[in-house]
Image 1 (cartoon, one colour):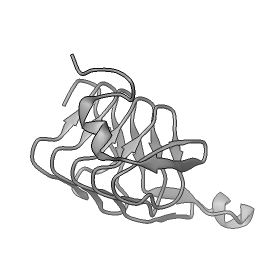
Image 2 (cartoon, one colour; image 1 turned 45 degrees about the vertical axis):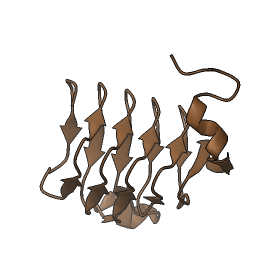
Image 3 (cartoon, one colour; image 1 turned 180 degrees about the horizontal axis):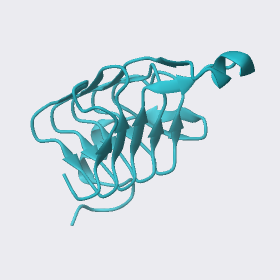
Image 4 (cartoon, helix red, strand yellow; image 1 turned 30 degrees about the vertical axis):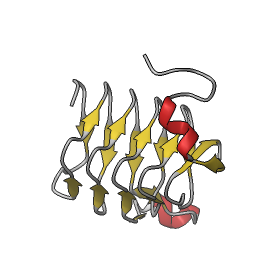
Amino acid sequence: MNPNFHCEFGRNIRVGNHFYANYDCTILDGAPVTIGDHVLFGPKVGLYTSNHLFDPLERQLGGCIAKPIVVGDGCWLAANVTVLPGVTIGAGTIIGAGSVVTYDIPARVIAAGNPCEVLREITAADKTGFAGHDMI
């Protein structure tokens, strides 16, 4: 894990083997956060389990809700990805840079955008690197 890791409590975070987080990772763990094995986070990835209440009066009283986040084995969350409360990202999935993940993403897909949407499945052709490029 690179410098400038921030978390709310720390006690609600479970991390698998061979996890790598680049610079400025933030995890607000008001609810459980589960990160699988062989997961990669690019710079400035944020996982946020908590959200303020929508009703203005309740919000003024400091009310908030928290829902768990799960990142499956073998996922790669590229730079500046934001994951919101209650989201599960399936095993082997890639989330593109700058994405805001607002709902569950299935396993073995490439997804990106704001809001994050599935672009395509990961296939055998992806074993050679970026589409149209050789691995170095």
